[in-house]
Amino acid sequence: PNLASCVAASEADAHSLGLKNVICAHIADGNFHTLVPFQAGDQHLVRQFEALLTTRALDAGGTVTGEHGVGIGKVEHSCREHGEVHVAVQQAVKHALDPLGLMNPGKVLPYTS
Image (cartoon, rainbow, N blue to C red; front, side, top):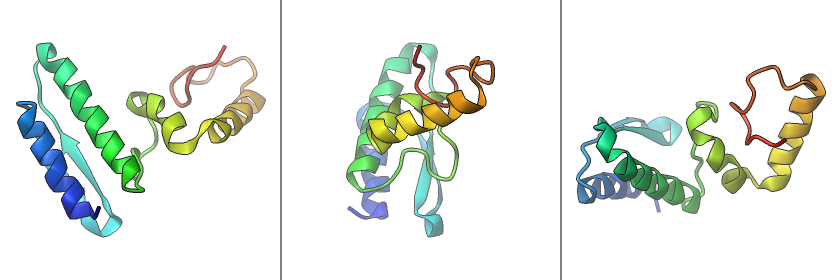
């Protein structure tokens, strides 16, 4: 699927879940962001929407991170997107540089004990 169909399908998903959303895009870079204002009671709907968005992005050969880093909200998607070996290498580098785990524990990579 092309980017336009991904954006259209994402808007349709938000609508079908009863969520309002705003699409912000820099199409020349090939990515878009969706902003979803919601009430605390709707968080489960936002999580459903997130799952649909991430699946669509990865199935289309895209990324769930865009030009931004993984961040706290996308840690869970990094193994799915990059594979366990890739994440294990990142964790090994992190451990080599921060053997005591003092720098941003659990905030960049999936946490392992």
